[in-house]
Image (cartoon, rainbow, N blue to C red):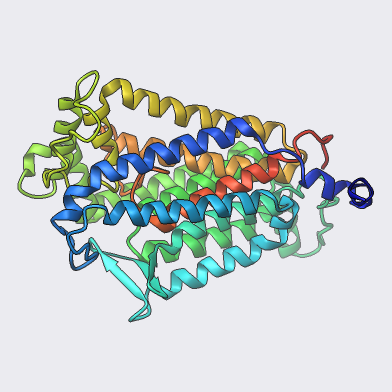
Length: 410
């Protein structure tokens, strides 16, 4: 009966039940496990002394952060396996709903009683007692929407539209269509809306990651490099304006260049991070033996957890973790290259690029290579909903990997 039932399945259903990519899964699980261990090691001091009672009341429980992170990790792993069993073709129609839901949630940030602020920014919502950043969902929504639309570029868009040459509007439309601009208009509108809402939240790092995710999908879809040049110039000009015309960003650049100029203020955190990294040396002080986490280094279990990694595990341990991230990213791109169709390729490219740049930005900030951005380290930084969403993204990649043995399709 089992064999007959299997024969009754369509080819698409049989492909969706194929084996997941074990190397990718193993790397994800290893990084999550190490991340949980580091959250436990980095957070128990601040949890025990309840350093942020206005934001999180730990009640003196040294395991508070670890237990919450572990619970969300279990939830995320379950979600990853459930999503990996879904035929990824369903993500096409789901993309509009995910993007729409993320926009609504980001708008709720500004609703009193639901939206929450912290660190001078308004970027969180609290729904049913769960506090999270809707921009995390927006990143996935943008990737899914762009991948679903751009995967149709060559096979389903059909021949160019015929515009009337008798009117100025028709001639302009024909010209813009010939250079590929009209094709990008819907994606540009979506990007402007999402970035506009995130900008109102004073969430510069979120804007950067959304731009990176969108650009990676556009690049993989074969959009002309001319538009990347123009877009890059526009983004660069906007960043220059923000950095030079806003005191907040100007101060960040100043502190990045010389943390010792304000050791009693904004320079304290990056300077303590460098002390942690330097004191770890080659082999580190040993797991659990960090001194900087004892109320010296702010955000030691969040954005700056990699500093504790360097202090406890040394340069060798930090390099091993970076190597694991590199292998995961390389494997992700390998899966993208071997995906069954263009949609799968674009989806995996977007998710993998988001992971790659987020890892690069966080480690760059922690080590002083980049100015502070507020970007967390995937699988490591404390944040239950962010971890669950990241694991859900990995489930989408694994869903694509199930059909990797099938012949290429358009």
